[in-house]
Amino acid sequence: MDIIEDLKTDFKNVFGYDDSLRSFFAPGRVNLIGEHTDYNGGHVFPCALNIGTYAVGKLRNDNQVRLYSKNFGNSGIITFDLEELSLIREHDWANYPKGVIKIFKEKGFQISRGFDVIFYGNIPNGAGLSSSASIEMLTCVFLKSLFNLNVDMVTMTNLARLAENSFIGVNCGIMDQFSIGMGKEGSAILLDCNSMQYRYSSLRLDDMSIIVSNTNKKRSLADSKYNERCSECASALKKIRSNLDIKYLCELTVEKFEKNSHLLDSIELKRARHVVYENRRTILGAQILEQNDIYSLGKLMTESHNSLRDDYEVTGKELDLLVELALNQDGVIGSRMTGAGFGGCTVSIVKNTGVNDFITKVGEEYSERIGYDASFYVVSTGDGAREIIGG
Image (cartoon, rainbow, N blue to C red; front, side, top):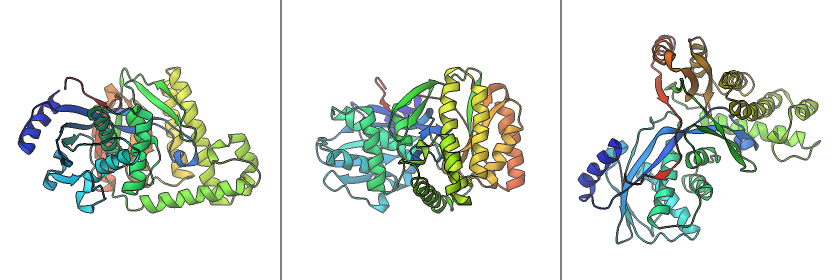
C-alpha cells in the first residue's frame, strides 16, 4: 500500500528509525439516513468509508509519547508523558489520541510504555466525515494491538466516545465511533442508539457511487442551533411524558405521536415530528436495502432532507441548493444533508455513468449562485478500524 510505504519513509525522516513498525487504519464515515435521531434515542444508518486515517508506529522503552501528523506538519512532533495526560490547547489534534490513552488508563488497561506514531488522514478536513472519531478509533486499535489488550471493538467505541465527551468536551453521540469501529465493506449499519442493538444491511453499489458534497460554508450557527434543537426536543418529550411512559421521543410510533401531538406548541410539534418520522424512515431504509431496493432508499433520503429543511430547520440555502441541484441531475438515486446541518455536507447516491457530470454541473451552478466553490468526494464503503497486517 503506497500510503503505508510513504508513511514509513516519513516516519524515518521524522523519528530517525524505521525498524519493526506496525501499521493501522481507521475509516471515516457517512450517515445515509437518520439525522438528529441519535440523541433522541433513535436509529441511525451510517457506513464506514474507504478513506480515513492511517498510522505507523512502534513502542518505546520509556514513558514518552511522540506524535506527528502529516496533515499538521507545522505543529511538529508533539511530545507528552504517559503520567501527564491533560488537555493542552497547543497540542491541537493530538488531544484526541491523548484523550483515548487517558481513558484506557483510567479503565484499568495497562499502557506501560510510550510510543512513536506518525499519522496521515485522507479524510478532507471539515468535510463532516468524522476525522476526529477516526483518529480516536485508530488510537484504540493501536493500543489494543501494541499492548495485547483484552478489549472488544464495541467496548472500544464506547471508550473513544467517552474520551471525546469527557476529555475533549464535545457531547457527541455514539454513531461516529461505532460506525468507524464496526464498519464492513459493502454494508451499512442500522444502530439503535438507545439499546445499542445493531444489524448490518447489504449496500450493493455495483454501478453506483456515494458522492459527498461539501458546502464549504463556515458553520458558525451549528453548535448553538444544535443545542437549541436538543432543548426543543427535551421540551416536547416532557409534555408527551405527561401522557405516556417513555424515555425518548423515538420510542413513539407515528400513531402514538399523532395522538399526543396536541400537547405540543407549534415549534415542539415540528421538531418532534421530524424525529419520529425520521426514525421510522431509518428503520424502513434498512429493511428495503435488505431487499436490494436502493431506489426506494433514495426516495427516503429525499424525504429526510425535506423534513430536516421544513420541520427541523437545520439546512440553510447552501445545503438546500446542493440537494436541489443533485436531484436535477441524471443518474441521481437520492440526496440529503448529512450531519448537524447549517453547512457541512450532503450525501448523494449516483450512478457511475453520471458521476463526472454531477460534479461538473452541480459544482458550476453552486459556485455561480452561492459565490464560492463546493468540494466533491467520490467514496465507497469500507471495513472498520484495524491493524494492517503485513503493511
